[in-house]
Image 1 (tube, rainbow, N blue to C red):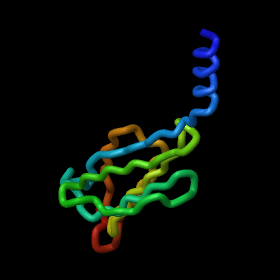
Image 2 (tube, rainbow, N blue to C red):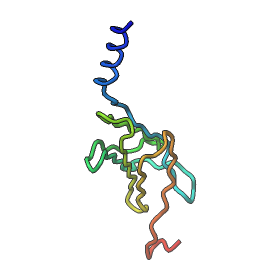
Image 3 (tube, rainbow, N blue to C red):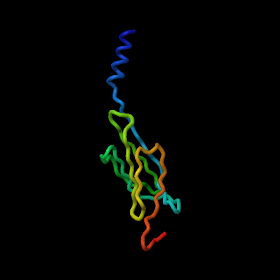
Image 4 (cartoon, helix red, strand yellow):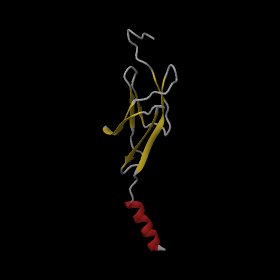
Length: 110
């Protein structure tokens, strides 16, 4: 019984708390609610770039990062597309749909 307890204690003390942190959803135009393709999605852990990719034709994205040594890791995800205001989200929930607003320009004052 004592051996089992000591073995369990050792496994607990020496096991790491590594885990995945993920976010996914659909990026849409805030005015039309249409999906946006080719939105640049960038993920960071702390301030280290971990991944960059573009949304598909349906606006879908899926990003996961692996946090070594801590289960309460940090994930920052940014969304940007030319002609739209960028967004940044820290530690987003698992599912997060994004609505990007168009930038105001002289040609498009709306």
